[in-house]
Image (cartoon, rainbow, N blue to C red; front, side, top):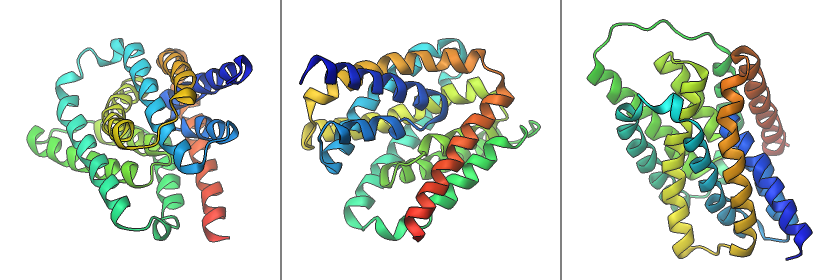
Length: 248
């Protein structure tokens, strides 16, 4: 690999880590970069999953302010996300994903629109029942992420925003932790059993770590309303693209 190719993958990783940390759409940048580097689609997907683990690490490091009083809540949500991701991976191995492609654009589009909805008022409810319900929904989003993956971050962010009524910055930080756990178990499996291209993974991972670390700073300093529009617009754009591809 030439120094120029190394630098380009680092830049792609920075862009992907930043977009992933802010909007949950990292693969829109990193996956095409790996294809451009000459990897096959399957190898690019595996290598991309491992590299994006470093985006999650950077995002968590950059979100310590938003996460300092959320860890107790997040422990069981991370477990739910990991179990869902593992279940989705097994489902992918057992069934073809082609039949699911027509549903995906609608899921992404609805999640993107949900981000634009105002925060719901916090109501007095059973904490135990509320926690179980949220954990179940996180599990389902994890299944989707393990099975298909596109814009899983947008779906998780929309879920946390609507269910908890928390701020965008705190919800985004929680999203990064949960998806980081789910992505971590997949990355471990691919590192052991998959065909990871480590030469391309390393510069991409370096960039993802940097971009992921910068993402929370952007979220913290951006106007929440404007940032919601950007995230929702990007998600809707992906939904339209996937819809045209699926129904054409």
